[in-house]
Image (cartoon, rainbow, N blue to C red; front, side, top):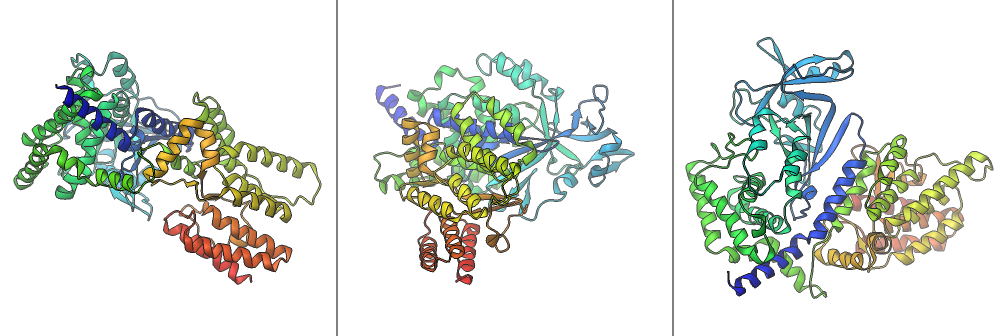
Length: 608
């Protein structure tokens, strides 16, 4: 390779780092989801983050995937190794009449304590009781979710959850993967680490199979995540660029004919076959060309072998002749004018457009949008389990992420007990008050304003209106236009500013002085003013009420003035509330947030 090509490769590498994220940013994203999995406690279930975001990629259009694994239902290869325990159920693999990569799950024994929920999922075939993947997948699917493959997906395709079962041992159909001769990657230590985690079973059968509704797909998502984590950054960027081409070019012409799982499989095979020393920034262009041409080869010969079970050809019966020719034409066109296509993708175009309109000389992706995901922890956290969660968090090695997560949990814990009127002087009230103040101090590390607004709400509930107004004025001085409201869709300009602060001051100081969060009140809504409880819209779980911070600040200021008899103050607060809504000042672009804002305005007007 010439020096010119090597230099161009490095420039492409850096350009992709700005769009996709640097190695440090990717690690930060992964740590966030790893900690979430460790913290979230759902009775009898284990949550495993998967998909692009958990892999460290935050590309536009990528969703957040979660595997929900039952602790009470375990899968075994045969009944000789099953182990019956109280309140549990054993399922036995039955590979008869199934294609490689799929299996049926047969009931072996069910304890009396865990019989009741399974009746809705059982199908009896020739005297054998099978666990139906179709019935299990569709059972009690929420109204705000749709069935998509083995998953339940949100209506906007931003979130997928797959309920699944776990086999604690490595299954025989994938034993050849352990023994396969490989000169470089993955090494023996990684193979051992993968094998000890076993495999999962997701509720989807082989399309067109006579047993499709009974079959379950064998999922290696835990293994695949570990393999992705072992990628060099050049390998990860090649994988990300393949996904960008898939989303912005191939899907636009051929819909879902090719999915990202095929790209991941191709990357695994290439990484196993090639020397790791080839994958470096100065060799970025040849490495990516190799990836693209392997995809073309696989499509041309209609062969994409499953990485763990090669007997399973993922491209078998995938295309009609017309689809095959059209897809090959598209891929050859991309190969013939590769960088013309790449730099005209929507992802690259949006990056250049934002860079042109930015005051910054450069833009770069950061982990900022991923920090929005832990905000939803309160959905899964029960007050009774908070001490256990804090114990887990304290053991985290990442000091700053530990403080950030503890801060979020503290804000949740601050709302945990009922508010007694502080006019009553007794030891119980004093202890409650001191406990909340401790939570307040611990909660200051997650953002600019939400903890202060919770403290203001506490004073309001205790009729300490003057102190409440003092805190609101302090908050208002902090909610300046130079701050960033945390969301799943933060712009690259916002991400760049966050990264600059993060590099200079660290995560905690950056969040404490730069980030604004919406304010969440958790059931039983102890700190939410009683005037706002009846009229605010509830979420599907009837647990959370979310307010834009500035909207809530002016609404609470209005309520304080109302009870103090300050009519001028009420008028000023109402005017500021109207202006905030009109200017959309720190209101995330979600319909529910605007509904809450207009509801607050309606309540305020009714009290004039």
